[in-house]
Image (tube, rainbow, N blue to C red; front, side, top):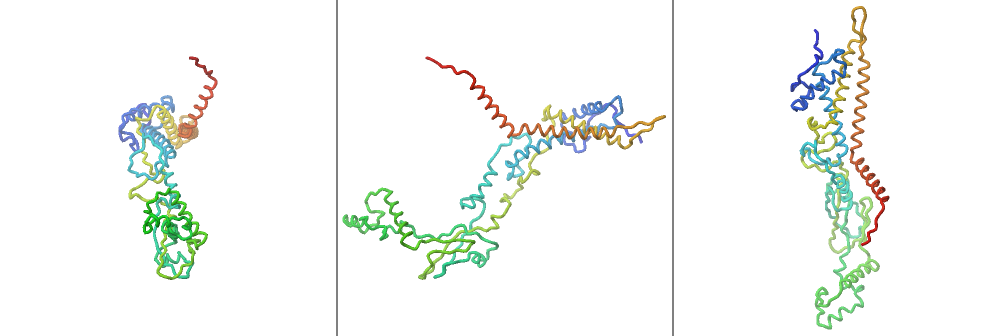
Length: 383
């Protein structure tokens, strides 16, 4: 059966391409037939027959447009992935949208430091309490977790074991000696009142100094309330004495929460990596002449490669008195080199338009302008 080859013209109809990504765009419909004629003539028609049909040229054109969009949007994803991550996939297509930078990735990183400092983050803090035993100074908090049915290791973050506030002991006999306050209050008949309502105007630094004196007095003359925590082994000072029930409160986290590598879910599909950033195939009519020129060249290389494989089915064709050797090897080699060169050229072009390169060029331009301005003579105005 003789399969028809390129007759010299074509008439594109929607559905002629394998995927139909751009079939309904009027501009693509027009360019499909124009490209078919262009590619056939570049391959030698009408001097030689071109063993391709119109649908082969349409397929090459569709493939080239898709490849262009893939390279373009892959570059956009690499440039802006940190701004996309964590957003819902329902934010809509990113095609032809200006992507603004945000601080989401920096905030996510800073939250981890906030968790360790106890001032934020995504880890829950839990509270617990421990009954102190008279005469017992050391307590195993890991054992406490086991006894309370907690799965996994815990990490103690804060222990509420402090001396009573100094303000509650304003009349400490050591820190208060020599102030003469009680004598002054008694002389005015106010001795039965609290110092908070002593009717004497004192500067605030007086109270601060008194509190500091009480705290320093406790630290030097008394057993200071403190603790030591090593590997969840708690040692408290001073050693608890009898005389009632004493309960120690503390805050802790689960190490399994902190070690969890996954960010908290919002209950919907999120953008997690380059594969689900919402980019779609490009709109052909919105591709400028620079992009279309590359597309036509790449589609021509694809057509050349297809023609090479078709002619490679028979290395020679017998003719009366001789045979003809086909050029399939040259076509395939040339097409492969052209495709590689076109991809490299496109990526280089995208690199020159990256945010980093554009900002570096602007900085260099500004520096050059300043250098030129320094050579401009400055006039002195005399009024």
